[in-house]
Image 1 (cartoon, rainbow, N blue to C red):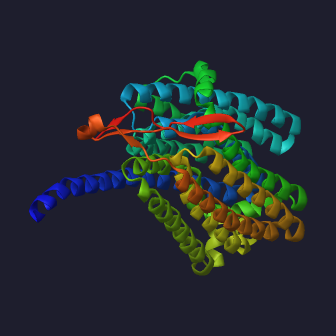
Image 2: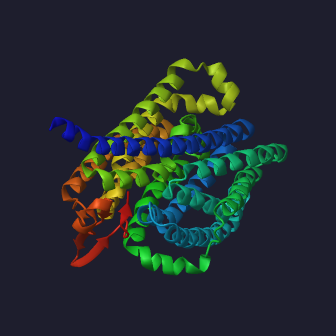
Image 3: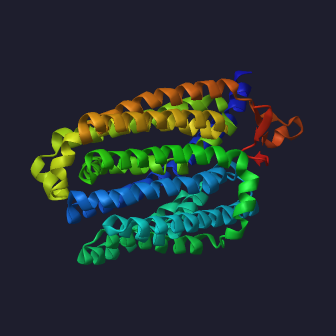
Length: 463
């Protein structure tokens, strides 16, 4: 009898082990892709800081932060819904979703590019010129990001890795030319146009033509998720932008360059956080499909692992890097940025731990709870960051942000706990039990007497 039981358990064990190995493979490509993205952004930031000095690096940082806001607008409207509803679906459905989502990303780039152009012309001077250059490169940058989301939604992280490698290769000659020109505009164009090269390569990889004309239709179809994700994403990156602008107004653009320089030293982890949803939301959705009770463990390991790695990196910078090496890498920016390494490290630790809970809420489709968490965390970020700037300039702002992210992570995990309690497990179709067909029951939440249906995956998946 025990032999029979063991025989019955064996296929399940093999299936579980196979699922774990498949997840490990997808996560490996995700980590590889993020490593390339992190190293690319890290190298660009250091190169610009070393070449231009603290003031010009502050201008470049303001353009960079603004790009982060636009990127999150694109993700909320276009690619976050793609990840939730078009992961692990049939090929035709995936291609249709990618065509609409990538077209929406281009549309967002064009609209925000016009806004950046007008703002740059109105501002004038070196800052205005940087925003004019940003307007030129936004559509290509957003399209490249959309391809990455598309690859991870399909479980083909290898293609995203190759695409980011193409960007890195194209960036090398572009940065060399920018260094000869020696202006902020040249570096913005070098960074953005090399990203456009990767965007064109992504079109070759997928063979899918983006459909910008379907942007409105895509928004109508996905608005139950996209509106909330848009507000959530913009509140996140918008808080960073408001803090940067506020710090510049209170303590000067040099202070912005100093804070950004310290953040640049934590660049690999900041870049990882920006692109984290490329891997974790899709993997969280797969964990939810196969073993809903394991989602919490997945999120704890994810957030805790990142937080521990960020802490080790920051402490290594603090205690192991001599000033002479720092000045060699960052030039004059090092002297103003190195005192801020500790608070910036703590801020990244808090944000890293929170991403585990954020991935879980996205996988659950609990958009109201993730939105609530992000709004509270963003309020903390802006309030504490700007208050700190009033009290202590760049250092005060850095410590204020560290307090905000550590406090905000508590909010994220509390909301995940509530979301897991409310989750309705998927119903199994008895007729198709032999095919291990999984049917997703919609998660319904009533808001102001209006029922919003979250059905992340609408088609059955057969193992």
